[in-house]
Amino acid sequence: MITSTSVYLYEQTEEYNLTEIPLKIDYTKIVGVSANSIENKLFNN
Image (cartoon, rainbow, N blue to C red; front, side, top):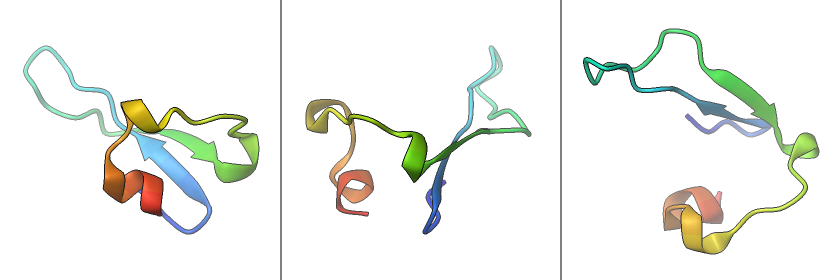
């Protein structure tokens, strides 16, 4: 999930369900992004 200030990463379980509590990463904490490893939608946001 992407908001105006953060990216939330959910982990997929062995049953292919997403975890209830995601990892929240504030944009200010991100020091680098590889455009080859993310979708265009995420990169554009």
